[in-house]
Amino acid sequence: MSDNETREFPTATKSIIKNSYSCDEQAIKNVFLISSKAGKGTGFLLSPSGIIITNEHVVSGCSPTEIQAISSSGEGYQFKHCILDKDRDLAALIPNVKISGGLILNVLDIKVRQEVETWGFPLYYDGPNPLVSVGHVSGFSFAKDKGVITRIIVNAAFNNGNSGGPLLRAGTNEVVGVVVAKWAPFTEFQESALEALKKTKSGLQFTATDFRGKKYRLSEAQLVADLLLQHKMLVQVMYGEAISAKELETFLEANNYDIASKIGDY
Image (tube, rainbow, N blue to C red; front, side, top):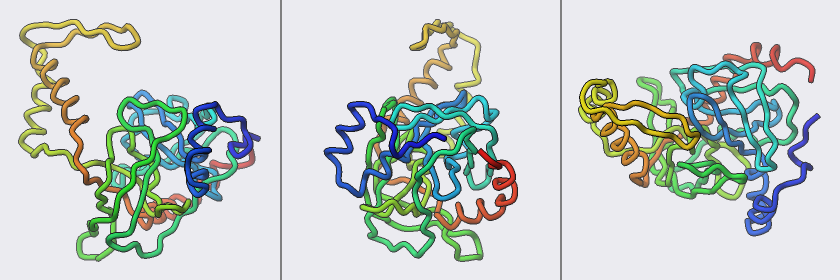
């Protein structure tokens, strides 16, 4: 049985725990870097189920064996099942081994001006420990004709890589949402134009080499699209969205039997 509560932590993680408030320790220990062929994101261990929650888009198109979660102790975890909800943009990842600990889901009413925080792995930051971003609840998005909160709007710095991280009541280990997006200043027209550039393979050709040494052939249009996407990722807008805890609860309840049957005995 793996135990991320008692496992030896690397020096960097010990230092961040030592220099943080005691209430932050649970978040630091129970937030994971999620790595897959779809990209990089954040996930968190949910108590008492022992599953790891993230966004669907963080693991989209991946089989369970193509996903890895890395804890702040440096321990890597593999998965035997993943349950996805594309409409809600939620994923429940079921580890091969039981992981103890976890954060608590809180679906009670959350108020505007409530201080919230998220821990995660934004942009190119890969840990070992997550980084904190703090803000306040600015407003909500509601399900049509139902008055049910589906998204929480927060004036905090959410960036690529924060996706799937827990939105916590500041100073607690209570999850009130799941970080899903930041508001970036791109219109629908600009998004479609960018998509067109990405698909244009004709024209001047450019050879690019990534950090792994792998070479790619890009057209001039694709190169421009890549640079614009980089700009979009780095632009900092102090508003972002999180999926509400109620939506996460509904997702878990709808898949309760499937999750329970796939967890099985560790």
